[in-house]
Amino acid sequence: RAEMFNPFQRPKTKGKVSEHEIIAEAPTDDHVLKLDASIFDNELKKSKYNFVMFYAPWDGHSKAFMPRWMSYAQSHKMAGTEMTFSLVDATKERDLDKRFEIEEYPTLILFRDGVPKRYVGDRSPQHLDKFVRRNLLKPARWLEGTDDVEVFLMGRDVTVIGFFDNKDDLDVYHHAAAEFDLDFGETKSKIATEDWKAPFPTIKMWRDFDKEPVRYPGDVRDLDAIKSWIATEMVPPIVKFENKKQLERLFMGPIAANIFVFLPEDATEAEKMSKSLENAARQLRGKVHIITVDAKE
Image (cartoon, rainbow, N blue to C red):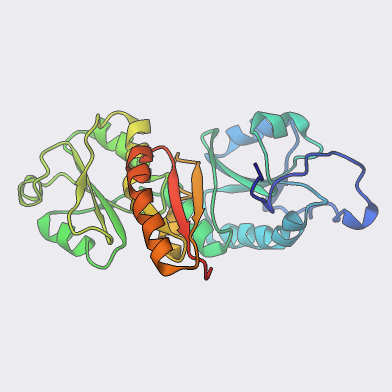
């Protein structure tokens, strides 16, 4: 079976690297630390947030991203963000490379109180900022009452709202929300629970591809179950490759397996194949994502 090419995947062979492939040593700046295994853990303890780039000197993607990373770190320093930026040469620091299972370059990991959170997605400043905000700030917007809920739902692709009157339940919800680049809200308004048919504790999701919201059916203290439910319900059972917004969502959350189905050119045959996939999609829901690719793509 042929494997899908991943341009970011580290090479399987570890041969000698020619001189023209090596970039200069990562620049030394007072706003970006260069870490090795001997100081890594101690440096993590010094700051609540440490955003670390694991790179390879010979890697083209690392070469291209390095100036953007330094500039991004500088912009946060100037803004006074409570965050440290760091660099690790994963080809030299093999223990760290193995410890954090670095499989592609560059890999970005945000450490919050020493706990790692891997960044997956577009490496543009705008997307990185969303990730940082979710992890540095409260990841869900406070909604005072039923009117706030109604306004919050307007014009959004996917909206998740937690109805909670218990801080412990809310903390778990916040941890789940920090994993996704979606719009999260929260309220403890009793009137809102009545108007939106969401008794405490309830998590509900509204999607642009379905008229009716879905309600989380499980234990609100089960973080893994909540994350799995969000990852499953935030996209339809079958995602069309042409729908870029839904496609981007697939890379959030714990569901890592994606099946790409390439449809035939004939429209009738493509429709038949799409219909036949619906049963498989229902059976595999929550385990894998199914993506259909039109012949024109």
